[in-house]
Length: 155
Image: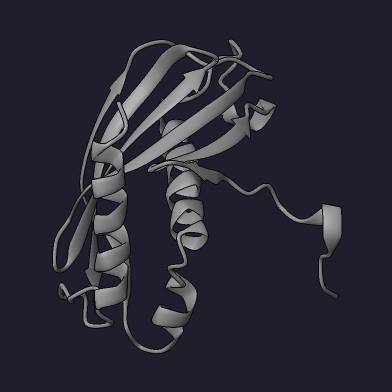
């Protein structure tokens, strides 16, 4: 059975070089006090990164199934600034900072309205089935670099 029309999962969008992905805080995301558990911000960011790649035309699944490998997080720096709470509507913004031969660096923020809650810089490295770093396809690097250049024009 296929999912059609309005029954599609939520999808983010690009505004210039920024990929925007909306999430809602559900009960399962929180601790007993109704505050988002710190590790769940990483889940929100992972969903946003995966969506960003898909919307940018990067088919991770086909690449993996074709034996090309998959992304693994090689480095992560995160800062928590304010808590999100049950039922909050959040927006995850992702921007490509730099594209290298085998990795991409993405800066991400999580906001509630205009309030910055969390920000992180994530390095995702492409690794082959053997777990060793592997060059990204040239088309992917080109797409990432076009987003970096586009972001330089955005204030």
